[in-house]
Structure formats: structure tokens, C-alpha cells
Image 1 (cartoon, rainbow, N blue to C red):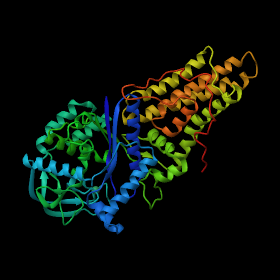
Image 2 (cartoon, rainbow, N blue to C red; image 1 turned 180 degrees about the horizontal axis):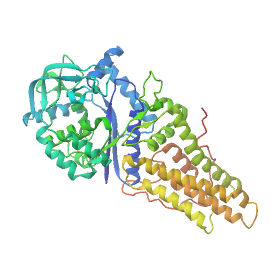
Image 3 (cartoon, rainbow, N blue to C red; image 1 turned 135 degrees about the horizontal axis):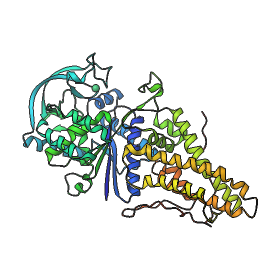
Image 4 (spheres, helix red, strand yellow; image 1 turned 180 degrees about the vertical axis):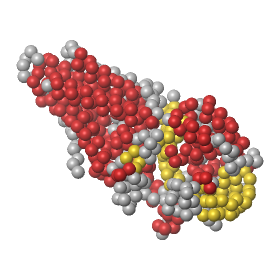
Amino acid sequence: MRSYVTTPIYYVNAAPHIGHAHTSIMADILKRNRQAAGFETKMTTGCDEHGQKNQAAAIASGLSASDYLDMRSSEFRRLFDTLNVGYDFFVRTSRPFHMEQVALIEQRLMDAGLIVKKQYTGIYCAGCEQFKKPSDLDEHGRCPDHPTLIPEELDELNYFFKIEPFRQRLIDHVNDNPEFISPPSFRSQLLNMLSDPLEDLCISRPVRRVSLGVRLPFDDEYVTYVWFDALINYLTNLGWPKPGYELWWDTAEHLIGKDILKTHGVYWPIMLMALGEKPPKQLSVHGHWLGTGGLKMSKTLGNVVDPFEVVSLLGSDALRYYLARNMRSDSDSMISIELIRQTYNSELGNRIGNLFSRAGKFAKARFEDRIPARGDLTADDERVRLAALDAARGFAKPFEMYELPRVTQAVVTACDMLNNYFAEQAPWDLIKKPETAPRCATVIYVTLDALRLVLEGVRQIIPTAADKALATLGCPFEASVGTPWVPQLDRLPAGREMVEIESLFPRVDA
Ligand SMILES: [Zn+2]
């Protein structure tokens, strides 16, 4: 079994932000999830280095375009490395192989009679780098996504891709493949976009306006529209059209924000159909992050969350956990350093880290540095063991991105039960009398074994701390291609000596 997970490629006209961190972390979590299920995996993320906005940013920086792109793309790469995002391929659309395939695709569509040159008068949003219909604009005639920009009236000759001939086929595809859009609530939104005839898609920009891009193979007065170029990365990352790419392409899952549903749900599948390729297996859609006060983040409001700053204060697991736990598909979610800090202290620190530390240190102090062996189990033991097994099982089968908050909630529930169990059983009392000492050993074993099981699952979200804890317990996580991980109880090696217990999530105060 294979899995190919992608993120959008990010514009490099500014420094990376929390939205970039979010989608790339989600892709990494899905990759780890599919690896645990025994899949062979490929995950890509990276940068879109073409287009008008990048060109303007390069000019403003005073650097040459290539120096500017090198500087920015290494900044994005450094962020993803810092966040433990295990990408297999880091995309840069400026690489020659990608650019050659974009030109090849354009030539093929031209030869098939699907590209026409014509005069076009329209309203253009420089923020979207897209032509807009009057109905796309708000009551002030502005783009809803870029209300501070005044859309320009453009009248120019351009090349257009005829997409209307593919509309009915795409509608049929959406209807025949319920898994194409995840979560399913976005299906009707996509079908709405397909309810009226589709206007030809402008795929060129005159070089005098934009020069940073792929020249059209049939007219070097034009570069390729940046979106048309960018979407093709999903194929060129696989070496398309060299044979072998199709093994991965059949499994493609594109993670996208809800603002780019049209490019990925309308333009991209139609480009693929025109090339004789299949649409991606799935588009997995998420909402956006709002700053303090539920407002869009802005420097003026001072509510911008810088992912580098979060990692330096709280570590990468803290950010990964907060994003996985609070992301929503159908709505936007709020984020601030304070909210991340609170979640880190209360859920990772108090529920997981403290229990691990207390039970582990107890075993070391009272059972000669070793994991004690358990005796017969009580109904209380069985109840917490089942909750841990249930939480771990959520991570053992491939899940979809929108299911992450639910999968994470099972971890919180299991850890709450375990903490209550530990407090009620009071091993510090049981150890005092010889007749209850064996029962104490069972409580410690049950607690540590249940924690181990939960950590084997939640390591998909918090790999740094979970792998450290599993190493302390002498149970490094194991899964490999073709050998899925099966969550099981009683795998903690009784009698095994434990190394020093380190704090997993040291408390961070405001
Ligand atoms: Zn716009």
C-alpha cells in the first residue's frame, strides 16, 4: 500500500506563518499515520517561486530574484525541519525539471486545441493574481480576500485554457466518488462552483508585467499563470511523465485551505483530465487560524503567532499538538501563544507528562529501578486499559485530516481516566503493607503500560516527547512497510531496568 500526501506550495513573498506551519504539520501527521499502518509513504511540501507577488518582493528586497528565492525557500525549509515535518521532497518551482514539464503540458494542451489566444477585458486582483467576475467582488468592488487592494481593469491579449468541455465529467466524478472531497460538507460548495458554464481560464501573463515564471513554449512574450504552473508540482514531484509516477499518483491526497478549493477542485482536475490523467484521490480541506479576539492576524493588531517563536518558547510538540487538537474543517479556529501555552501545560504537561514522571519515578524508587510485573487485574484496571487501547486504535488505522480533533480527544479522555485511576488506587499507600504491595506493582504496571500504548499512537502528533518516553520505557516504536502497527496491551517488558526519567513537558509559565 502506498500513500502520497501533499501540501500546497507556499508563496515566498513573505516569511512563513502559522498557516504554512499548520498544513505542513498536518501532512506530516498523516504521513506518520499511514506509516504506522504499514504503508510506503511520500510527502511533499515546499515553495511556489513564481508570479507577480514574488517578483515584487524580490525587487523590494534589493536582492536578485534567484538570491531572494534561495533565501526565502531556505527559511521555509528551516521552519519545517524545526517542526519535525518529514517531507520526502521539498518543492521549488524554479527547478528546471518542473519548469520543463510545465512547458511540455502547455504544448500538449495547445496541440489538442484546448488553448486559445484572445483579447480580454476584466477586473484583476493582484493579491489573488486572478481575474475576477463582478460577482466575486464585495459591495465596495473589492476582492473579499484582499479588501485593501483596489482591483485593476486590465485589457490585454492572453492565452486561455478551455475548461467548460470538462465540466460535466468533473461533476460526474464528484458525484461518483464520495471520498473525493473530505470532509463531505465541502462537496456541495464544489458542485456550486460547477453549476454554471465555466469561463476559459487565463493561463498567461505578458512578460512586461510579470517575468518570474515559466515562458510559454509557443510564445516567449508570455509567462505561465502562477497557479497553472504551481498545481503541476503535484505531478513533477513524482517524476511525471516518467513511468512509475502512477503508482503514487493513484493515492494522491492534497491538503488544502478552504480558500483554494476552486483551484484544486475545479482547475486542477480539469487540467488532469485534459492530459488524460486521473484527478487526485482526495482533496482534504481545512479552515483557517484567527488571532486573539477571533480576528484575522495582523501586525497592527499585534495578534500574529510566529511559529518560530512558539517553538523556541514551548517546543515543536506543543505547536503540533495545539494545531491537531484545535483545527477545524468547517470553521476557523483561534490561536495565540497564550492558548498554546495553556494547552501545553494542562494537557501535555499535567495529563501526560506528570503521570509518566510520577509512575516512572515511583517504579524506580520502589521497585529497584525496574518495571514491576503485574498480578491479576481488577475491573478498574480493565477499564483504563480499554480506554488506552481505544485511544491508540484511533491512530492505528488511516484517518482523514478532519478526524484529528476526535482522535486527539480520545487521548485526553484516556489520560484523564488514567490520572483518576492513579489517584484513587494510591500506590503510595499500597506499598506500605506487605499484603497490598503486589497490588501496588499491578497499579504501576497498568499505568505505565497504558501510557505506553497511548504514546505509541499520539507519537504521530508529538513525536519528540513520545519517542523519548517510549525509549525510557524500553519500548521504541516499531512499524515498517508491510508490517502495520497493532496496538496491544501488556507489551511493557516487566523486569526491564528504566533509565533516568526526564521531564517530558517542563512547565512554562507566562
Ligand atoms: Zn484577491
